[in-house]
Length: 460
Image 1 (cartoon, rainbow, N blue to C red):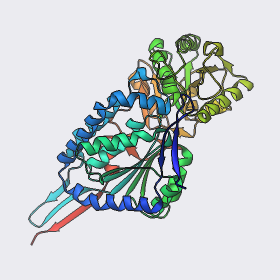
Image 2: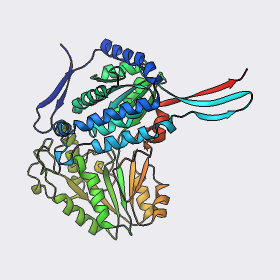
Image 3: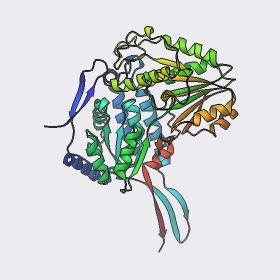
Image 4: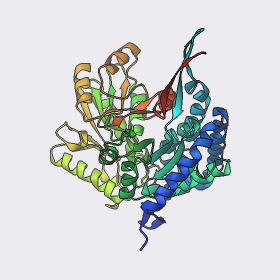
C-alpha cells in the first residue's frame, strides 16, 4: 500500500488534498537530480538566476485569485485578507535586489606577488522544510535567496498546506527554472530524517516546532550539515507609561489575534504599565468583541478556524487551566456561538495571569493573550526575559533611546518599537534560546546559504 500525506481542511474536516509520499529510493533519486543540476545552475550569472526567481514570483502573483481560497481551505485564513503575495513579493524582491552586492567577492588585497579574495559559494542542495501558518512567505524566505545564491532547492511543505509547494513548482518551472533545480517533494518524517543523516544536503532550513527542530538536529548529528532553525515563540509586548494606548491596542491585539493567533512572531503576552492597564484592557476587549468568527470563505469573517482541531484543543486547555488557577476571562464566549469545540475557537483575553500559568509560558499559537500590569521597566524586562523563547519583542513608547536601552536587555532576535508582527527583509530574521539559531533574509541570509572560500594566488 502506498503511504500518503493528507491535508484535512479545518473548514469542515474533509480531506482537501492527498498525495503519495516518496520512498527513500525515490527521494534519493530526487536529491541526485538536484546535485547534478546544481553545477550548471551555479555557473549562471547571479543576475540571470535572480531574474528567473523573480519571474517565478510574478507567476505566483498571477495565480493569487486561486491561491487565496486554497489557503482558506488548507489552514483556515479568511479570504478577506487576500493571501500572502505582498510579503512574498517584498521578500523575494529585496533579496534579488541585494544579491550582487551580498554575493560579491570580498577583495582582501592584490600586489605584485599575490591576489587574495574570498568568494561566497553555494552549499549545493538546500532542503527547505516549510510550515503551514504562512506557507508562501515562510518558504520564500529561504527558497529565493538559496536559488539566487546558486543552490538547488528541495522543498518539503507541511502536510496542512500540501498544495503550496505544487503551486511554487508550477510557477518557477513556468518561468524557466529547470525542474531539477527546484523540486517540490512529499516526504514522511522518517524519510526526511534518513536523507539528512545520509548527508544528502549541503544545508537544511526548518521552520516549525521545537520538537521538530530537535528531530532535525538529531538527524544531522555527526554529518556536519548546516541547520537553520526557526522554532517556537512567546513574543511579548510592553506598553510603557508614555505610550499611545490606541495605537498599542490596535497593533498588539491584531498581532495576537490575526491568523487566529497562528503567527511565528504573534504577540502572546502583553505587559502594560499599571497607569495604563485598565484603559488598555478595556479597549482591547472592545476590539476583540467586534470580531466575527466563521467560515474563512465568507468575506465577512474576520477570524477563521485554527488550522487543525488539535491545535485549537491545546489553546482551550491552556485557557481552561489558567481560569482554574485564577485568571479572569475578559471575552464573553456567547459573543462567538460559532465556537464548535473543534477547529473553530473563540478568541480570548485573560487578566489576573502570572508566569506559573502555561498560557504565559508555553507557546499558545492561537487566539489568546494574557495581559499583566507592571510597575516599571525593570519588572517588564524581567518578565519578558522569563521565557524559553526569543523571537521578537514589541516596545511601546515615545522615547526611542529608552526603547533601544530596554531592547539591549531583552533576550530576543528582533526588537520592535511601536510596531509588531512584521518581517523586514532588510533585517536578519533570527531568534535565540529555544526559538532556534541561524538567520534568514538580509545580507546575513545569503551568508548562511553559502560558505566562504578563500583564494590566495601567488603570481608567477
